[in-house]
Image 1 (spheres, rainbow, N blue to C red):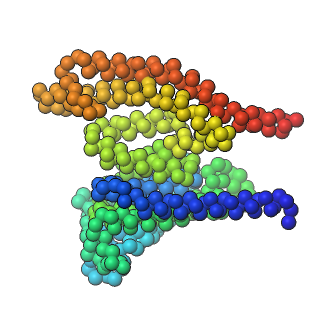
Image 2: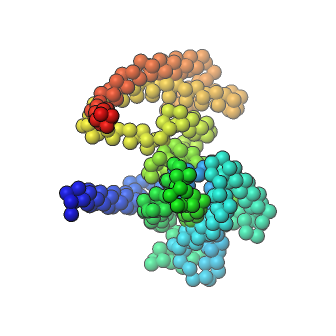
Image 3: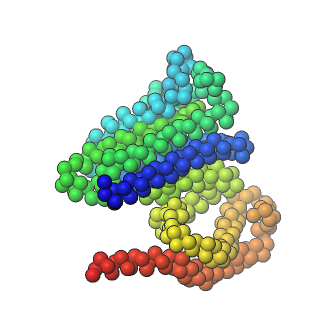
Amino acid sequence: MSHLTRICRAESVVRKKRLRILWLCFAVILLALPLVTSNFGITILTQICVASVFALAYNMLLGQGGMLSFGHAVYFGLGGYASIHLMELVGNGVPVPLVLTPLFGGLFGLIAAFLIGSFSTRRAGTVFAMISFGIAELVAASAIILVSFFGGEEGVSSDRTMGPAFFGYEMIPQIEVYYFAAVWFFLATYAMYHFSRSPAGRLANAVRDNAERTQFIGYNPQKIRLVSFVASGFFAGVAGGIFAIQYEIVTDSNLNTAASGLVMLQAYIGGIGYFVGPVIGAIVMTLLNTVVSGVTDLWLLYTGLLFIGTVLLAPNGLTGLIMMHTDAYHNRKLATLIKPYLLGMLPLTAAFIGVVSLLEMFSHRNEAAVGDDSMLLFYIDVDISTWFPWVGFTLLSLLGLAGLRVVIPVVRASWDAANEMQILSNSTINNESDS
């Protein structure tokens, strides 16, 4: 055994040990989160579990396989419908544990993905995206027509408490539903991670990067895309099954193009280039949909602005922003970025408060009743009938934007200094390779 082989094996052992620790920490976090939150927080955590599984399934298609789908909620919704019908059968006496409901939904999503993917994966790029969009519209229209399965506009509902208890768990309190969703979240994440590291997952990366080269070495790009598509449909169905248990109702809104657009936003905002990216995107979007929507009616506007800002300023998503600091961390200069970051947060916060306040005041003026000129902005009572708040928040926005123009060069200089060692190392390697 050569010295290089021993080094590679030692690094592999260390990497596997670190990975086991990460999975253990992930499990502990899922178990401990309900202990530090309220019942409303537990409900939000359950929604995050569902959204994360769906976003990870979508990222198997887009981030790993390079297939942009505008209709992936079809498999999520079909898995949910299949699961809700299974719940009805269980309520009528069929001896099936409800904890296996997501598996049934996943199998239904797998079958649907295989049937649709058998012809849609023959092409990639824009053609595939348009086919997925057409399929989504077709299934959404069928949900209104095929009432016996989809239930029409009212959807299909059931009762999860009518099934037999599973080792004493009847999934009546929300905490039991959360742990049910958390276990399936962990299992699905573990399976999707290892699929992405399997030969099938690596071949999907190869087809994403260059389908022609993959074909030249003897692989069929269409079959590889089909495998990724079917696997993604399975885990989307699993997410639909968890959703059915959580809400006990599935409607056509769970498989239309709006639901498909939402999961696409989650993947892009979190970062499609990283495995954990869709989970971060799912957390952000779920909080916007639950917490922020309860505070303001403009949450969809803020979601759109967040998406535009991510695409323009952070193409690798929020996870990419975090991973950009790995070089500074290895250079032991990460702490030097704290001061310039705090300095940059001052004008950024001022601009954020100013712009959001102006938008909220415009919204309140257009929608409030006549004479209702008082509103609450950042825990401050504001009378929008006077000129002072309009001028004050406008000046605050302008000062924040002007401050950003001054602070950004300082932050950039600090960033370059923190990554200087890595830059010099890369330039040295390039010079040696040229010589």
